[in-house]
Image 1: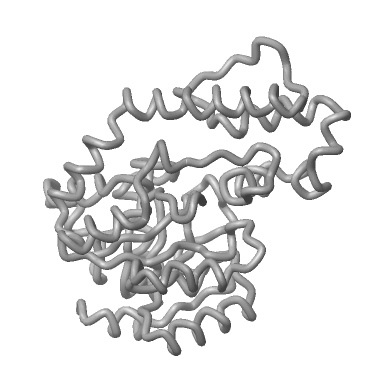
Image 2 (image 1 turned 120 degrees about the horizontal axis):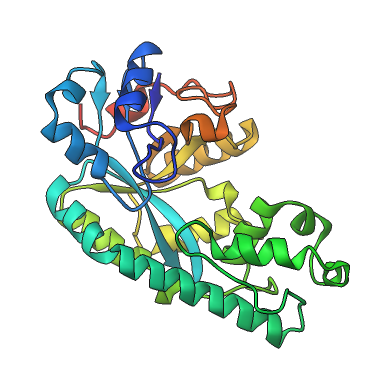
Amino acid sequence: MVDLHSHTTNSDGTWTTKELLTKAEEIGLEVLSITDHDTAKSYVEIEKNKELQNIYKGKLIRGAELNCTFDGIKIEVLAYNFDLHPIQEWLENYYTPEKNRNRLIEEFNDLVGICNAKRIKIENNLKYNPGTEYPVDVIYYSIVKFEENKKFFTKEQWENRGLFFRTCTVDKNFPLYRDFSKQMPTLEFLNNLIHEYNGKIFLAHLYLYQLEDHIAYLDKIIDKGLLDGVEVYHSSFSDEQIQTLESYCNSEGLLMSGGSDCHGEKKRDRKLGIGYGNLNISKKIVDNWNLI
């Protein structure tokens, strides 16, 4: 059993690197990748700490989940087995606290401007704290306070904050859509960067993006040669979706990845290794990477 998608307190998980490694050892994972958002800090910690190196006896594959854009749509990719220090140095320079703060404030101001332009009602003088809040969340919770805003959204978007967020960042027809390419790297750039430093790049959780045609979007990426593989197995995927992606990767000669997307106690029912109880990913998919 392997898990190639997990998070620690170095991004938005609740377990420390030590706690995640301990859990992976307890459940007998054969292969683990810690894929924190826009950082590989856990691997720097492990490199410097002998205690951390001795906790987990399985195979640890260096990883990170990176935000980027393709075709004007915000997506995430999973980068694996890259050279640690040049990639972490780039991430630390690109995602400094000051730059992150400015990006979030810019995003919030853009969303307020869109609401005003489209006459979507929000609270006057709405406040935003970039240190503790996500812009889309603040806007969403303000929008749903006004019943007259329902006409702009589907019932599902109105009632589900997570769906609202994913649609906002993906669907160009969504009332609050904005182009994130001014805030984050393109897939083309990350593909070049990760390959320059000997890594592999996979599209993360395709079916979480609110796209009209997921496979058509994937086709666009593959046609440009921007991926080594696809995350085929994910806690949120149905059996049919997994089978579709397995067939796609086999026909296109792409590598496969998969994982629980575990965030520790933050999403307690999504467990390391098994997701919602629907995962049991074989080590064979990693064997095909020619890494171990």
